[in-house]
Image 1 (cartoon, one colour):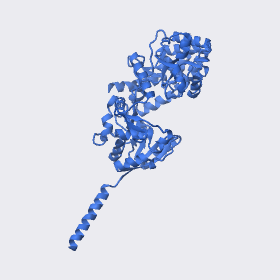
Image 2: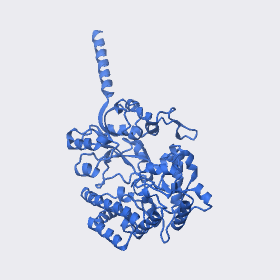
Image 3: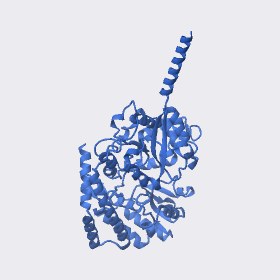
Image 4: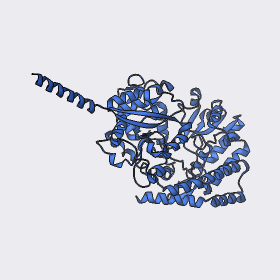
Length: 500
C-alpha cells in the first residue's frame, strides 16, 4: 500500500510538472513606438493583459516616443546582439537593416495559414500585399492598414452661399474660377482663394497644379500614359499654373499668406467667412466649424483650357506594423501573438475600445463606434499603436463608417467616375518600385537639393511672375542638381516593377 501511494504521488507530481511546463508563458520583448499623448505604459494596459491570457505570451514593452525614436533606434541597431524580439509601429530602413545588414528577420517562411490565419486571409485583398516586399523580394514586416476605399487627397470646394448671393453657377474651368474670384472680391470677400503652404496637407496650394494636367506631389515625379517617369516641374502645365497663380496674386484674388501659412491659420480664415474657393480633405469632422459646413459644396476640379485634370491619387497601402529582429527567440510565437490581435473583434477593440462601451455590433452585423472618450482611450487600448490590417473591401464589410468617412468615400467615388485622377498614383514609384540601398541613397541626396530649388522657385514665380529667362534658369538649375539622374533612378526601379 505504501509503495502504491508513493507511486500515485509521484505520478501526480509528474503530471503537475508537465502541466506547469505546458502552461509556461513565452517571453518576448518589443521596441514599441508611442504617441506623445500616449502616457499609459503598455506593460500595464488592459488590452495586452487580456491578449496575454488568450495567447499565453507575455511581451515586455520598451515604450519610445517620437522625440526619442531616432536616437534610441540608432543605438539599438548599433548593438545588434542586444536587440529586442520585435520593433512595433514605426518604420525603419528595410533596405539598410533588412536587405543589407540582415538585422531584420525575413518572414516569408512563417506566412502560413497555420501561423497567421487572420493576416493571410486578408493579405492579398485589394492587392494590399503589393508594396510590402523589399528589393530582394523578401518580406520584413507585418503590414498595418486601415483602408476606406479612398483614392485622392484634396477635394475642391466653393462657397455655395456666396455663389447663390452672386447668382452664378459653380465653376468648371479655370477661366470661370478667375471670373468667380473677381466677383467675390468685388462683393467684399477678403480672400476669394486661400490655401496653406504645407507640402502634405490636403489644403495645400500645390493642389492647383491638377487643373493644369500636372499631378504634383511631394516627390516631383509622376508616371505618364506611356509608363514614363516625368519631372513635374518641367511640364508646360506646371509653368501655366504658376503664371495663373501669379495673376491671382497680382489682382489680390489669392490670399498672399497661401505661400507661408500653416493649416490652422488657413482654417481660421475659412471659419471667419473670408474664403470662397479652396481644397480640403473633407468638411465634416475637420477644423471647419460645424455651423460653417453648410456654406460649402464639393465640386470637380476646374480645368484649364487645353489641359486634362490630373488629381494626385493615393493607393491605400500598408505601413509597417511589426518587424521581427534576427534575435527573435520564438518567431512562431511572436507572429501568433500578432495574428491574435488581427482577429476581427479583437482588432476592432484594440482600435476603438471595449465592446458594449465604446463599440457595438449593430443590427447590420457591423462594428459601430458609439462612444469616443478621446485621449482616455489610450489608458486601456493601444488605438493606432496596436495592430490592424483591413483592406478596403474587408473593412467596409465589418465596419459602419462614420458620416465623415462616408463623405470622404463619396467624394473619391465621384472623382474616380469623372476620370479626373492621374494616370497612375505616385505610390507606384514611392512604394511599389523598389530600389537598391545604394540607388535609394543617391535618389534621396538629389531630392534634398531638388526640393529646396522647386519650393523656392515656386514661391518666387507666384510672387514675381515667370519669364522665359527665369524659367530656363530654373530648368538648368534642376539639371545641374541631377534631376535627370533622379528620374532615371525611379524609371529603372519602375521598369523592374513592371517586369515582375
